Length: 166
Image (cartoon, rainbow, N blue to C red):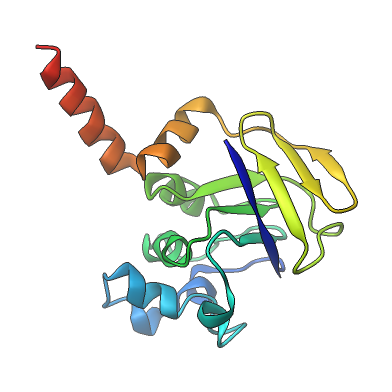
């Protein structure tokens, strides 16, 4: 799976209140959540970001609460993957459960906001205009979750396949 897009950079310790402020947590509509994604840092982020753009961040992306709203808000904008030096563990699992790909890679200093980036999730190869980096690839099972659109869709598909084979 190859993902290409333009880079949006965010620093270290981007918590879930920055990804989606708590005042919007009463909403469950992904479109509404997406409208407020990253609002505290870039108030018009949802209007500027384009489908396929990619977030590159520093350490501890997704720290804070364990809310699933954060990866939903990111995905709602059409962002297919977040690359960071590290992720908060609960955010990491929630993201894959919701179908958002994450890759740990130390590309923050070489990534330039607005530049195009290409990620091969199977091999872990990340290419920017100036550099190629080998990161740890996303495990095959996690890729299956992403391709299915998250854990619930994955399980539904597996149950349907099992039912068809009975």
